[in-house]
Length: 146
Image (cartoon, rainbow, N blue to C red):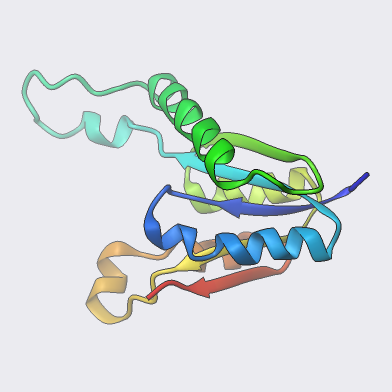
């Protein structure tokens, strides 16, 4: 039975799927369990915007919806692995939560995509992968998605 872990963060986008074959392969090579995670950001940042009578979902509502979607994603995309697959919805700042989760499960590696933005686009959009690289204590395999 596998005792090591490979963490695969996803945002369910086509771009994040580009890292999935490598995450599966690394889990097999390392005889590791694959941990698929999705991070929900706290919605409180939207509360300060004057958006009229728009209902802002709670973190719990976002997490419940994400859990359903993540379970479906795991059943569709991660069948046929030799070792168990785990899924978890994380709540908070994505990069920090991904790195913390990897520490929690003693991950051998995090495998995720990067969009490869630079310049103004990078400043505006930021990079979750870059932040994970700064916070993680295990290796991060960054797969360029474009």
